[in-house]
Image (cartoon, rainbow, N blue to C red; front, side, top):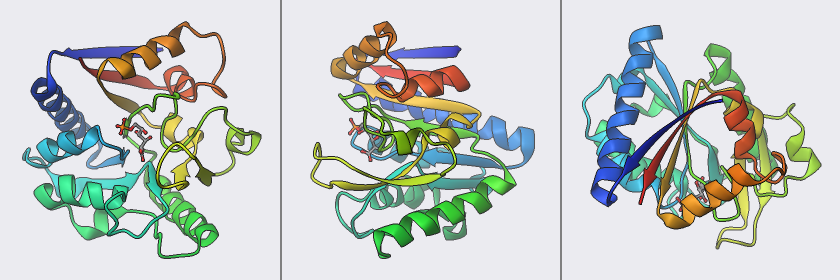
Length: 230
Ligand code: 6PG
């Protein structure tokens, strides 16, 4: 397990350090292989980080972005992760539309899953994700992989799944599965606040496996950086 930790003292420092770290990580990948594929989570934590990241000058034309998960709602809905990423990161960085790979939630849900899986298959055929940006819910979920993970989600043959949750307003979710997230070269967790630290620490102390703590698969599979906000 390669685990790096960046501790910050307040919101401003959390945003600044997370954005700077991600910008450098993206730049390093572009320098190394000529392009960068990054998976972006939604939720409330990353919005300010994406805004700050989008304002950093780098070769955004060489960055391909996909969503780690999406709420099954129209792309212009206030709770849409696509809307969040477009308004925070894409608008500032002016990432070309052709560089964005998002689920089409205007399709019936099964077709949405199928089409997104196909689009990700084409993307990962170029190269697996270089970086994935993750959060963690108070139940230990990452992406929209809600523990305890049902058998079908433990099946690594699928890239995308439809999951449901009653924890949030939007119950139906489209999510990348564990395998493609764990296959990324670098996972960056953005965890702001003591609640997140308690959940993370509980996971690290718990012997239960990835069915209960999906992030354990990520920790066991790739380089992980956690940016803590206190
Ligand atoms: C989403 C995210 C989800 C998020 C966690 C933490 O669509 O909500 O992808 O996995 O990372 O729920 O969310 P917060 O950052 O809002 O605490």
